[in-house]
Image (tube, helix red, strand yellow):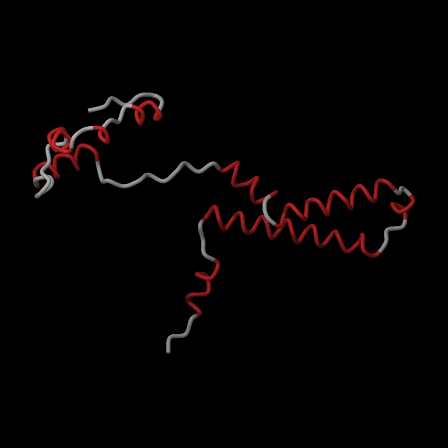
Length: 140
């Protein structure tokens, strides 16, 4: 049995089962090629190690938030926002009299921010938006 080390890569490097003859593998794991593990062994190993399932990866919330703020279509919106600000700063005369397209960009920025916040909130709570309408579904 391998001892768990601090580095999982070391544990993986110590695995040598793939180089052993098949008879030695059966002996090492106390199993048979025809019947597999016996029922008491399955019960004992299940109590010791738990279910044989892959654990989900740890969620890195800061990466998720950055992806929602700067990823996908939001990246294009940030570029448009920066270009707009650079355009406004580069011509100070326009700051006094804003043009119509400049005024229309403010609600668009608010809409984009609220949409991103809503999708981030729904993803963190893992809510399917269509499930909110499930009670309204009429059975036929």
